[in-house]
Amino acid sequence: MTPGPAASGPPAPTSPRVSVALCTHQGAAFVGEQVASILAQEPAPFEIVLGDDASSDDTVAIVERLVAEHRAGGGATGLVVRRHRPALGVTGNFADALAAARGELVALSDQDDVWHPGRLAALLAVFAAEPAVRLVHSDARLVDASGTPTGETLLRSLEATAGERASLERGDGLAALLRRNLVTGATAVLRRDLVDDATPFPAEWVHDEWLAALAAATGGVRLVPEPLIDYRQHGGNQIGARRPTMADRWARLREPREPRASTRVVRSAALVARLERLGDAVRPDALARARARLAHEERRRALPRVPVARIPRIAAAVLRGDYSRYSRGPIDVLRDLVQPAGETQPRDPRLSA
Figure: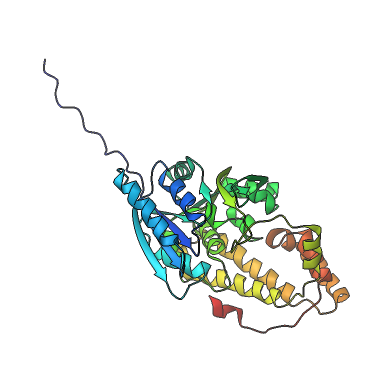
């Protein structure tokens, strides 16, 4: 009996295309190692969007050479180069590269890190398993300028608590991110449609923390707890990571409350305004929590100039749980009790939405 044609099942799912938004400035010393680690990923990214901020060294030429060699060897990763003169700055450069990316997923990349083998596959697996998740990030191993591990990880240097880590791992990232940012762009991959919700980026927010906050409010953020990149610390980082010393802590306690208190209100108001604009795309509880955080920051800004007169209001906020939900708990209680007032800089916080 001659067998009939094999039954045709549903088409095999295709892997999403991944763009890499790589932003550089005078990065010739390290960018080659980073690009080589990106091109070695399996699956390899669909494209690298290189946003270069007015480099005068060989940064762009190094990236172009490595991608050309990759393609000559049978690789398929493309390269888009966007040169900026004058420089756009970190957030502006990333905003431009993200807008130019064509993949369904976009990985953010600094110029001086190194991706571990299997890094991209590990993060893509989370997106495949959880279609609602909009941003996935990981821990990172801190290394020095030569690439030697320091013995520290990124989340330990940020003093992430067990509760904060648990919130990020189980998908309630908003609980952690309303207190402070714990998502570093160099460790993150996001869905491209998140960029549309996030732009334009408010001036008071750094690109990665803004993307993370919106992702947490509209779909979800997931932490992969293992370090999946080497996060290089070499003294020239535009945004780096270092565990604070006792001298750092003391200096922060003596910083004036203004203009930082007003900036926190501006940032919180920008988040509320964007979530209001996004409407039904926002998780049901997210807008209420963001508004509560804004109210908390407005009350903090309105604390009396004389420290002893602040005690009743701070005590009431502690009893409500505001400092544990929307600030760093005892750390910020102490700051609000002892920091000098500084000079107020009045501003309508809703102007930055």
